[in-house]
Length: 371
Image (tube, rainbow, N blue to C red; front, side, top):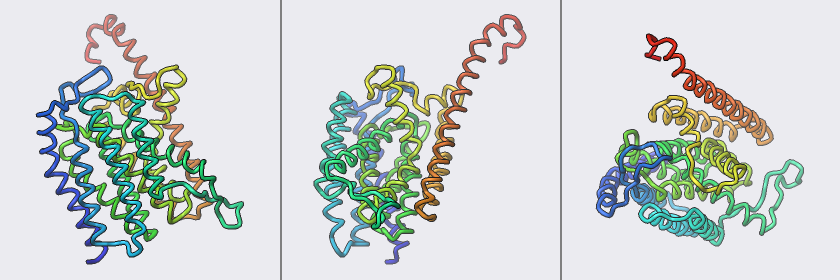
């Protein structure tokens, strides 16, 4: 079977399994009471079944295993790492299921994520070297202790970035779908076909789920899905680090997942400066701010899709050009994101001012009540 047919088979399997399992999981969630109820920080107005992540992860696992059977790794070096990835994913999944059903304190979720990260390290994942033009070998080794800390920070950070952006119907699933296609394109270009198969499996699983999760959603992926998807994406990028220097391997996911990563970083700093718990939920994420500007859920989600697709193209370009120029692109990208945030803040102030003045204007001009 040609590589193209293998990728198509893996993708189609992910979509099909997800399409079949999602309604089953939705019915199960309703039966056991795993419902996401409305609250002051959520945008849905009625209880929605959760636990959709079970269908996503099951579809990913089945399609990924099929892909590895169709395109095996002769050295079997990948098999051990994938075992660690699936064990870590099961830990994160267990934490997510418990949180979706019973509720779990943020600190305990963090502990579960750290344990899963350590499992990855025990199975050979890790940050061991960085690209450096000052080194004769082109890279600098990272001390073991520093590598462990950086690996845990990377996995936990990306796990939570997908979790925190999962605030609108179809948002997290769509962003992960676009990022997975980006990672697939890059890995195929670099010849990392097994990692590409994993990316295709993720893309198929979330696309099938999106049929039920896009606005108006009939099921949410919950922490079960959002944390697992972030964890899987972090693990896949670390798999790439074993075949190239870390800076090259992580540049693509950092760029393609810039929206959730930026949103997570801003949320952490915002809460830290306010003296609140860094994991305490609020309504100031990017998607909430877009709704404040007057966009509908669908419009806000599609806008972020377009931004994510644009970032995906930028991520692929960074692989095509010499590495020393990649950082220039990242600097320009960072400047663009800062400008976008400044523009968003300006628009928010303008909209707030208009809303504050509109009652007065209506009182002075009764005939202009259509504003």
